[in-house]
Length: 417
Ligand code: GCO
Ligand code: MG
Image 1 (tube, protein in one colour):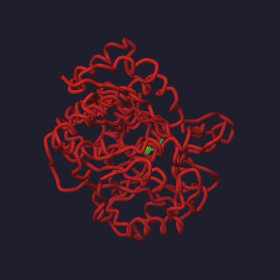
Image 2: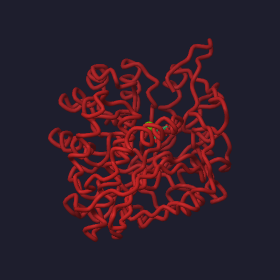
Image 3: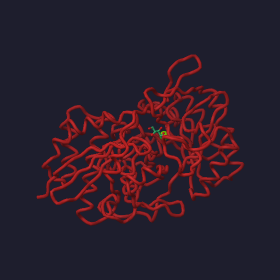
Image 4: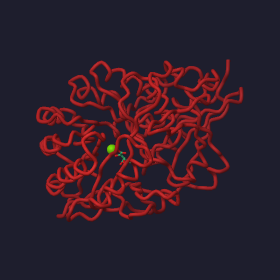
């Protein structure tokens, strides 16, 4: 029987912080799992190093389901983003090892390819319409076949999803020529404060989509992220007012931990809804899926307990014609992204994959074998996940403290970000 010999937690910050679990077996195979939790990275490092790594040494790496149940049930304290990111890292590293041992790309072990390539959406943003249009054109030139639209709102200075600098800047990397760099986590000792006004947003956003449809026509799939900032009745109003512009989805329209709130939204609008990047187990989806209150599951492999757990959520969703839209911003490491791509290729109810390019330094530390061809992603055909970690290279970029921003209304009240 083969055994796990070492388990290292590698923290690196080439363009932003990443936490990676690196398992090696007595047969010399290496498996990787992403454990990055943006803005709270070191909590997961401690969970892994102090509590999980000692349990892994000597275990049979082939027992993936058993290890998942052991870590989930054995902790007694269930769920939560820190726990589930740690379990995800172990789970993905074990799938990587199993597929490497089999000499196959991981998607083959998950049932084989259900399609030739993966529809992916990119992030266009601009403080105003001319900037936004430039960004959409830039994405179309890069081959994207679906585009997320985020813009500034008159009267608000800095908001989620819109680059504050027209050109990419530190810390995300960008001497890679990318123009819009919206990485939200700022390096430094305190989070950045942003401002928010829901009525102003609700008045402005439909005019943006009207202009985008006018400029780019009716066919381009367009997406938008509400980032949890509306009440159910405000979300219902927005969904209704965006119906003429035929969105692919409206994402995180409310803080959906109140799952019943989505009943109200659903009663009022046919705009498709996507939810779940901050969720971490199937229980967060119980009402949303069984009552068909959403159309897309947004969870990341990294934040939902790994491939084992997300596969079960997506199989549950499939019974209700709900499809995947796996989270893939830059805070999902190349390891987490590869795990998503293998799962996307294998499942039947794939919807779309979020895709943001990482910075050049990140791509050097994590060598990847996925393909981006003609606007479609493919995980590649290397054994396992197809990602290798340059441990020495990673060591050149130590952890840098970074926080996600937070919102205040004009009267100073803290609001959902
Ligand atoms: C998205 C997300 C991200 C999050 C980020 C927080 O849809 O891609 O909303 O942009 O804000 O993952 O760490
Ligand atoms: Mg989102």
